[in-house]
Image (tube, rainbow, N blue to C red; front, side):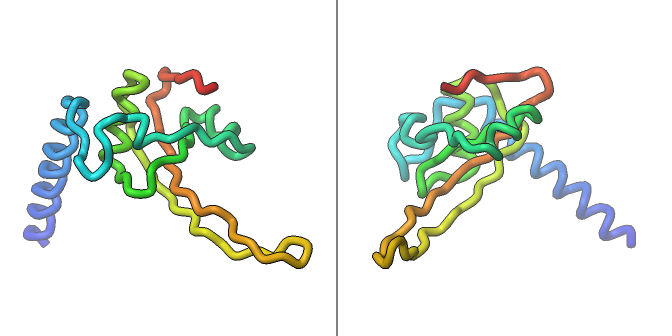
Length: 125
C-alpha cells in the first residue's frame, strides 16, 4: 500500500509543475492555429443555460474546432486579463434533420466552459 501512496504524491507534484508555467506565459500559443486569441475563442454562447451559469462564475464560449484546453486558457487570459481556474470542452456533433419534408444538417459546434474565481467577472456583449 505504501507504493501507491508514493506514486500519487509524485503525480500531483508533476501536474502542478506543468500547469503553473503555462499560465504564467500567455504570449505563447500553439502553431496549429493562428497566434491570435480571437481565432481560438470565436464568440460567447448566449443561451438560457449559459446565462444561468454566469451566476456561478462559469462562462460559455464557442471555440475553434482544433483548439484544446491549454490554448483556450491562454487565449482567455490574454483577451480578458483573468486566469481561469478550470476549462471544460464539449463537442456537439453535426446532426441530420428533416424540416417540412426537406433534409438538412444542423451545424456542429465546439464550446468551452470557463470557470473563474469567486470575485472575478467579465462583461460579455
